[in-house]
Length: 130
Image (cartoon, rainbow, N blue to C red; front, top):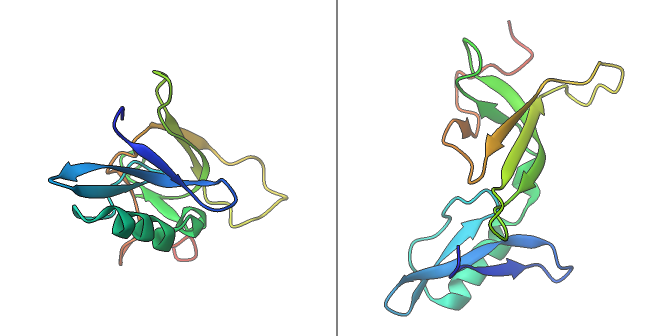
């Protein structure tokens, strides 16, 4: 990450990074450490991060490998690697915003996000169907 340049919104919130991708080309990487562009020009990499934004972090996610079926989870924390300290991603079982439930089980994952943390796909448990 030594050659990664942070890219922030106007309010200072980190959207991701831009790093070299070849001859005068750059690659955009989101806050989960996932590549979101092919090698492109710098301004296009900035635009890709701006367009990608952060709102997708609030969406439901699926976590494979912790139970018989994928678990529906929500992001709690995303802390990238920094200053030689390893980052982490914390997710919790989706509680559908029910404030009366006991605290949902949390899982601590490495940063960048492992492939087993993914967007929902058709056929995944939705929390409403048994």
